[in-house]
Length: 404
Image (cartoon, rainbow, N blue to C red; front, side):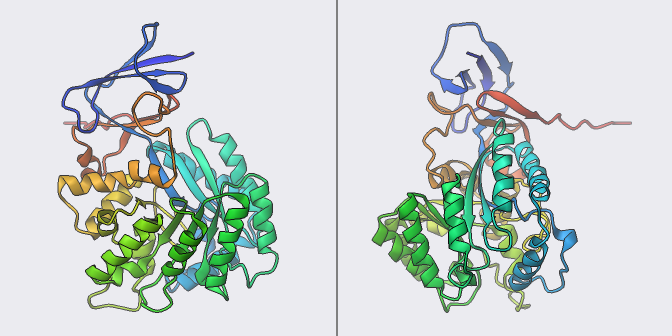
């Protein structure tokens, strides 16, 4: 049993420096047996960061796409065109590139969405399953299969989704706005989720029009199925156009139903409101107000280097900083809430029971050279080291000025 004592660690909210004890991949109360010692000299420790919504299968394809409009419709169309040429090794190599970026940015758990349809079949799913196994030393990968091209209007898709679930997929995603019958897709996915006893994660209400809102249907189906705490909606950019009182009323409904919300600021800022110029809306779901209503929230990356988001470095801290700028959140309390949406609140969304720095939790942690946790978001502080189950996974040497 490998033991490690981490001394002089700064923990969020603690005045004095602490010692963390690790044995057999978990934090423990203490141990008297011989152990290795790591002195952090006052650096701050957080549990590993959590990516709740990313697309590894279609990452790093921007050089294969013809991007002219920058719209959601074009992104879907160009990705579908590129996807026709995907093969398993191609998906694996591009996904591995993003995973390695995420690991050195401090991410230790990730939920990735994987497109399933008759064109791609299970090719992407098989590639990501290989990544799940090959990178388990540094990151736990959760697989969410979903019908990007529609489901009820795309014969054969449901059969493939069921095959993926039977082969080890962890949960089901949805993309109702691409279906000929959006509400029908929502209802069918809830039926499948109950059959396979899996959680649900929808791409939802991804525009700035007040019409055709689908979040109400998701709330109703969640309540009908008793699936509270097991349903997440991502994007929901329609929420950004609501006045405060209707937003709070909806927030209370979401909280009561147990529907969780993920904002994806890089993608949502890039794609929404392209038909406006003066007073262009920001189009990002207002997590800060939803959080006050009791909604479990998270921030995530969504896409990297494809038509949905042509940039990115897999830094969740950068996403938290971006969101803080968009929502004008600058107090210490605000910054800590932004940090919670890539850590502790994301752990609730993912229903993790072994997350944290207390005895019994997995020894997944990331270390920052700061004195206060809020500085991580304010400064986009890079992590200097990370651990998975008590084993160090990366190290980032400090930059050194070469003075004359």
